[in-house]
Length: 212
Image (tube, rainbow, N blue to C red):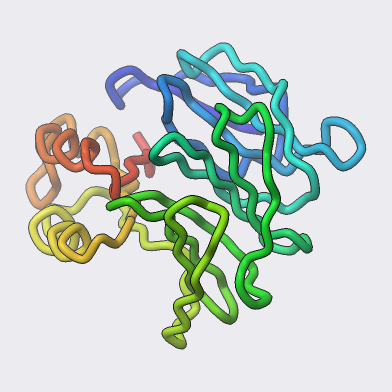
């Protein structure tokens, strides 16, 4: 799988996690955690983790295929799955053991995030959304909208001034994929580094790179 790391968002270096089909990456519990659809042994699928983003271990695994996303909150890791029978798993012992649970309905679960004391997962079909306080018991929220995830490209200023404030006030997780060169050089109409750092401190917000 392709992976790149950076210290300040300006210079990126390639890294080799040792697995392919990477679907999601988070920073939690003082390390980076990436979820993969790579079968490492039979029906075991890899989770790669790293303290520095450069040197990776893939000695953690999940059963079943089609893992799409992972989140961490309040001492618990939660992963969601798009097609297997048990479409979520959670771990309370730093990913040493996993408990597999059935999600509501037959949703193809695409993303999960943690914020304001809850895990929120979204799917591309009915029931579209579900939430859980512990990763074990899930409640469906069927609002008739097919959610994948909320993302913003480039790092426009109105994302900071308007969209982010509304989403945070309503406890809705989202991701910003910023163009690092625009941020670094204070390009007009885009966020600056202080705005991006402010947002990154909020559990509802994930920051990624759209391009350099």
